[in-house]
Amino acid sequence: MAIPMAAGAQGQPKVIEITAKRFEFSPNTLTLKKGETVVLRLTSADVTHGFFSRDIKVDELIEPGKPLEVMVTPQKAGTFSVICHHFCGAGHGNMKMTVTVVE
Amino acid sequence: MKFSGMTLGLGTLYAVAPGLQSSALGRAFGKHTKEANGEEVKPFTFLQLSDSHVGFSGPPDPLGTAAFERAAEVVNGLPQRPDLVLFTGDLTHDTEDKDQHAQRMQRFKEISGRMKVAKTFYVPGEHDAGLDGGQLFRENFGETHYSFDHKGVHFIALDNVSGPKPAIGAEQLAWLRQDLARFPKTAPIVVFTHRPLFDLRPDWEWFTSDGDDVMNLLAPYEHVTVLYGHIHRDDEHTDGHVKHYAARSLIFAFPNPEKVNGVKKPIAFDKDHPFQNLGIRVVSAGDGELSVEDVELTLREYSGVNGIQQMAKPLSM
Image (cartoon, rainbow over all chains, first blue to last red; front, side):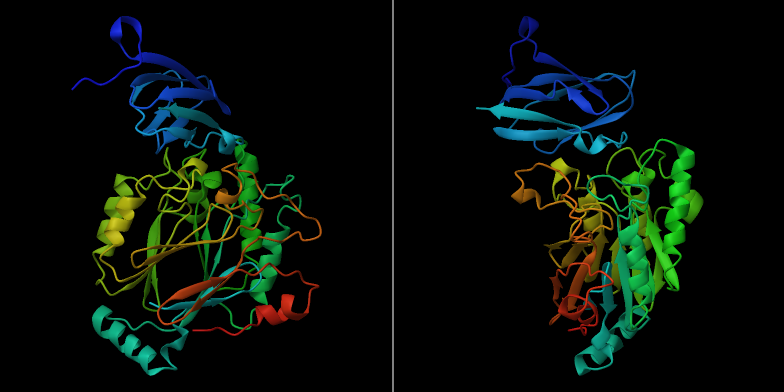
């Protein structure tokens, strides 16, 4: 079954680079389209961070020196938070990214 | 299993089945547990304290350990000494300086040791174990997950903070399955842990990712109560026949997420009410149901209905 994909090079899903470092994600806001698949390329600039959201269905650890790619297809529109759920130090509790999923 | 409780000062006092001796229904329940489980549940009280964050001092609470130290005084002044105390994590506030963290843990133990109770049991929080995988906790208290029995009640300590994610993990789940298999389905069980075992607010990190696996293992057991901390506010959640109770902290409070549009910030410190929102709850039992009443922490110098009389309020069933 064909899955709609955000346009990338040669019909591949769009790749979005995300860097995690104490204590923020960069970029810290993202807009995606419901039902469209994108690839999030996750990198840590310092220590291990988490990348978690029940709504977007991501649950990953980002280790320094070990970038990873996660394929995401948002199923519902709205505004959601992706948080760091690996305790990374004093500012860990406020480390989050806002993801807006549009129709 | 019936619990009832009263407000004290800081923390939550639970009374296990205090009506057992005084009512026909209670005596029948005691007889039933003896026949079904091999041990009759005897009435006793215990206390839950949580989130003392020893080492923290900042705008949400510039008083440091004042509330925790006051808690120890209040516990020692209780008319009936609780049999045991459960600490549900974040005993210390995190620091990357290992020596400083060790000093904070010693300070925690010194204050905790002031309470004149026979037994105290601990689980770590992520501020204790998140940076070192639980090493400092184990050096001071032993295993981060374990179980014990007290007067017919089976207590289970679970660790959902020492791993890389908020999770119990496969190894601990296997241990839990084996531990539970020793008990009949009628055994009274109290689970205590740091993070909620359900999705309270995943975007505030108020969750355990494999909490459902834990609850599925507990589902066949008829009398299960879960006590936890982490969220710095009281909360009650019912899932089938299981009640989950969160304890207030001993450092600063978080607001109700629904009332702050999802913005996670500690409630501001109020120097005129320095202990407000910290660590008090009344848990009282009705006909097999528990009800929770919030009572603000009282200061030593208060009197009247907001002070000693409140702390001396009789247990209700």
